[in-house]
Image 1 (tube, rainbow, N blue to C red):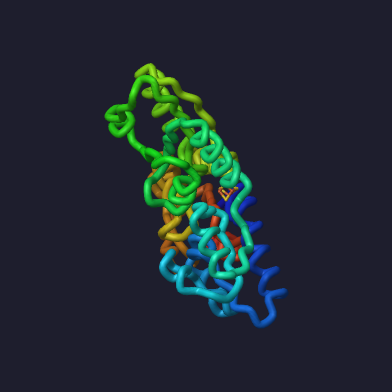
Image 2 (image 1 turned 90 degrees about the vertical axis):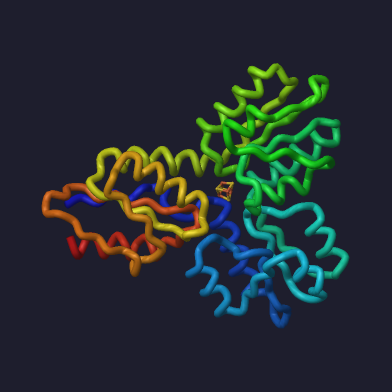
Length: 284
Ligand code: SF4
């Protein structure tokens, strides 16, 4: 039996950087308490490991407002302008691990909304990255993710609109939604802010799943990019399994299985992927 592990499986550039930043702070911080604003990545194992080393998670803005001492690490998703302001007001040390690709979106929406444009974010409302982006717009932004929402969108015909995307949004879906805006005749400027890491990961997963007899997708249950990977693989390969760690894997493979594919979301550590790969190699 052959095993193919996707080259793009696991930590993306932004998550790798955020992990490095946290470990650097653990070495340098001394007596100061270290916090992350929200769980560093969507992976319970990693968050537990960091907690054991003393890194605490700030769950919401209220908690941050009550904090007056320590180092606060901003995760790769980024945060709104207001969060930086609270940290400054409270005398907290901010260590910014926002992914540069997300930072770029903040800069775009800040500049475009300052020019009076209405910002439309194509993405999942409520996702921390989208909440952060919204917080850099000078006027309330519109968030939409479905065809119906795009079709129902109305605006003053004179209004200029700037469309950006959540970094992990599906490119084809983004194109379809932009097309709806074009057909409506609005004055739009479009910036494709989808991150290549996501696109590459999705394309590779699809290619592997298309030829695999069984496919394993590893990632946190709250990770939206892992869930999307699972959907893509399931579409190509009925025998697709979504697991968080090796403990969740209950593979019952028939003798005829020739190829098992493995991929993982952006917040899955390498050791978990390797563990699964070794297990499959030894047991089947
Ligand atoms: Fe950055 Fe892309 Fe990773 Fe998001 S998926 S953290 S944008 S590299």
